Image (cartoon, rainbow, N blue to C red):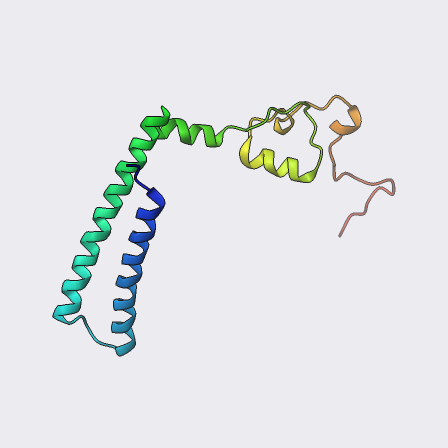
Length: 135
């Protein structure tokens, strides 16, 4: 029998919605918990904790069956899925994607300028008129 993780998550969400409904009712009526509501909320909280544990165990088993550890899955999600063929970007979208998902892309590395015109610095010197002296 296969455990359906999505079903467990839906059941947990239903329990959380019930807890939220109790809290909303209390806030709407501007009062504190009654003993019955407090007991029901505690019961729901324990059931949510049980579902969270079942979900964690089911995910762990599923990862072990696929032969992947959680660290491997996280690492795989951070890896680019397709190799980059050239150093130039085809579009602005490619540039943004490289910034977000592939910061080691060769085009994002700083390069020494090879042209003198690119090496020029903007300077604030005395212009051709010679400037003026304030007295």
